[in-house]
Image 1 (cartoon, protein in one colour):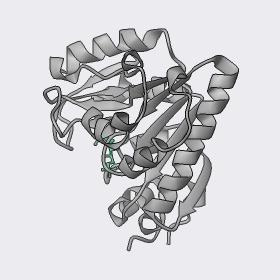
Image 2: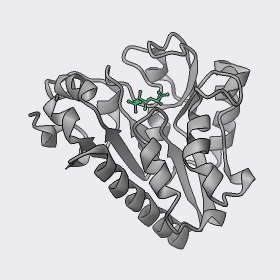
Image 3: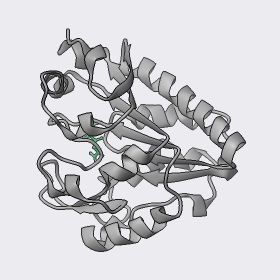
Image 4: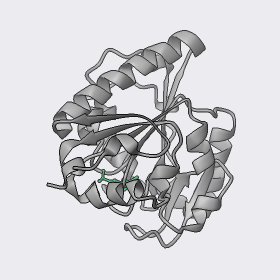
Length: 232
Ligand code: 6PG
């Protein structure tokens, strides 16, 4: 079992018995953060993670009582696939959450990744420039320690714009758009969601001192599912 409580740059670490428990906990936490942000600042602006880990969490979050008129949804990254493609992160979010909640259409800020990485990143940086810092960024972690679409050794890690083009991503599709490290780290809250034994070695490498994109997220709250910590 990894001593995940030593994760560098983590603000907190919680290990959950299974993905369902992790999803229930984070769905409630997002609802609490939303209520606090709307009370304090009149809006809740959150960037959503892609991949499979958060899917169940979004389903549970959609069942919470949220003041959707004051929520704005962004994306931590998007895959450069045609609009409506089932492989897109916004497609997953639509299926898991959006079809069940009364979010005003203008409050859904998709990344126009169908226009290609360069144009989409430039357009999304313009969308973000007036709204950073976000209230929350939700992030998954890949088997190689990537997060959002920030991959180890990729030039996007050096980018300073709010949203960046990604080329040659090792996780298909090769072309993507991602929030930059700066935009993510500026967020008031960051939540890392890690589930599955396939993530064990990424965590082990980070704990042994490897500087991977996920470990470059500062002051994040890490939520780990037990199999990622035990490797089984
Ligand atoms: C993507 C995600 C990516 C994902 C991790 C973990 O486009 O795939 O943005 O960063 O969060 O790869 O993916 P899983 O949750 O499916 O393991």
